[in-house]
Image 1 (cartoon, rainbow, N blue to C red):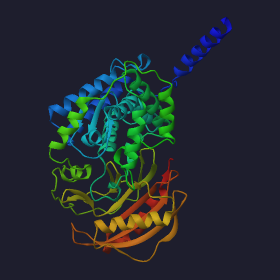
Image 2 (cartoon, rainbow, N blue to C red; image 1 turned 90 degrees about the vertical axis):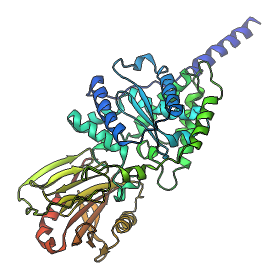
Image 3 (cartoon, helix red, strand yellow; image 1 turned 60 degrees about the horizontal axis):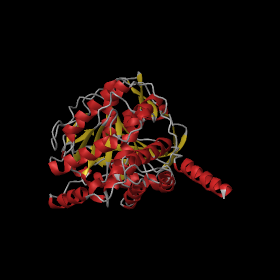
Image 4 (cartoon, rainbow, N blue to C red; image 1 turned 180 degrees about the horizontal axis):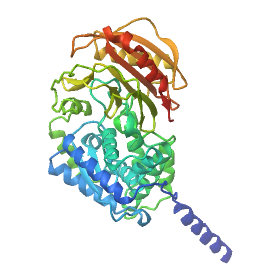
Length: 463
C-alpha cells in the first residue's frame, strides 16, 4: 500500500513538472536601447494615426483597449520593460490584420474582430503582436541590417505597415525595401512570438489553442496570395501543431468563459457602414509625391543627362546598387526609385517618373522565373493599357543570378509621350521575384542604354 501511494505521488509530481514545462524564450541580440524602441514606435504611431482610418466608436475602441490592457498583465516579469507604453487602437479597415510597433503602440483592424469566432482568437493575435514588442523583434531586425538614424527607421517601420502605392504591381501583397528589415519577421521570430503569446494568453485566462484557431482562420481567408497579416507574419511551419502542444503544457490562470461583450461588439460592427479595404484606403490617401490624394503634378522636365560619376545606395537588407550621382532615391513601402531631378511627379495621386530605374520585390510568385516574370508583365500591362512587348524574354544575369530581360513600349497616361521600358527579373533565395524597371522617353532610349546597363550590372544582393 505504501509503495502504491508513493508511485501515485511520483506520477502526480511528474505530471505537474511536464504540464508546467513551457518553452523558454530567449530574446534575440539587439543593438538598440528600450528607449529607442519607444521613440521609434511613438514617431511611427503618430504617422499611423494621421494616415489610417481609426475607428472612432467607443463601443469598439474601449473594448480593444481593455482587451489589450488585460493581455499586458500577462507579460512575464522577466520581459517587462518599464519604458514601454502599450496603447491599443481600432482601425476601420476590413482586411484581417493587426500590427504592433516598437515600444507598445498596437493597431487592430476591424476585419480581425469580424473574422474571429471567439474573444480568445482576437486575444491570440494581439498576444502574438505584444510578444513581438516584448521581445523587441523590430529593432533586433534593425540590428542585423544597416545602421540607420532613428528617423529613417521610423519611416521604414511605417512603410512596412501601410502597403504599396495602388497601381504598383507589388501592391498585391508584396512588401519591399527598408520596411523588410523592421516589421517583416523571419520564422524564428514568428515562432518566438507564437510561443510567448500562448504563454501570455494562459496567464490571463485564455486557452492558447484559440490562437491556433485564429491562425487557421487567417490562412483559410487568404485565397491565393494570403491576407495582409500573413504577408508580414509568415507561417514558421507546423504553427498550429506547436501552439497546441505549448497550450497543453500551460496552466490557465482563472479560466475565462465565453465573452458576452465580444458578441455585442461583433453585432455592433454589423450595424456600422461597410469598412473599406486597405487598398481603397491607400488609393484615397495623400501620396508623398502629390501631397493630396488624386492630385496631379507633372514632372518638371528639363531632366539633366546622367552623371558619369556613381553613387552607391543600400536598400534595407535586400540589395546595393550604384546609380548616376545626380539621381535621387525615393522610396515607397514597396519599391525604391532612382531618378534625376525633374523626372518625378504625380498623376491622379500616384507617383510617376519619366527617367530612371525602379526596383521592387513581388512575393508569393512561385519559383518558376519565367512564369513569375510573365505574371509581373501582365500586372504592369493591366495598369498601363498601352504597354506592349517588343520581343520575348531574353536570358541575362542580375547580381550574379540567372535573370530574364524584356523590352517593352508604353504611352504614359501622364505625359502622353512614348516610353521605352526595360524589365529585368530574377529570383531571390526565398522564392520572391526581384525586378528592375528602367523607364525613359523612347526618343532618348539609345542615350540611356549604357547608363541602364551600368546600373543593373552594379546590383549586389545582400540575402
